[in-house]
Image (tube, rainbow, N blue to C red; front, side):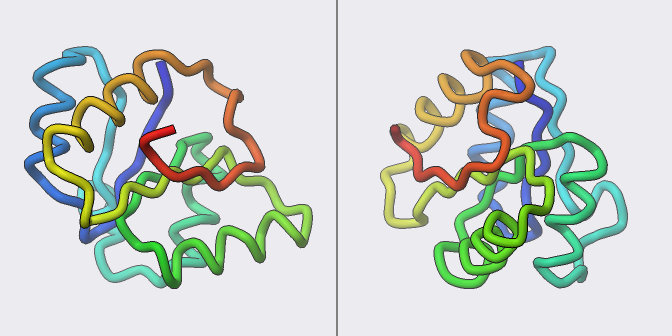
Length: 116
């Protein structure tokens, strides 16, 4: 199962549902570790140092910074984007399958959009 960090604006309903469906999930929110006002590049760096896939709704700035890290050859355990326009139930199931069915380094160096 993946180790995950969600950015500050990630939907709390999705987090709660994921924790309910995957009781052992290793998920922290940016605010849980004092990164609630941290710029995206710094959050990506923290996620890389911690070996956590970053899960976000931010299809604009976070994807830009993730792509910059990838192009620069900097480590990135992966970034998973779930558009806010996605229906809540679909977002929950997509994240559950993604987190529960993936291996630790499976998404390293990748920016993906859920659902797959």
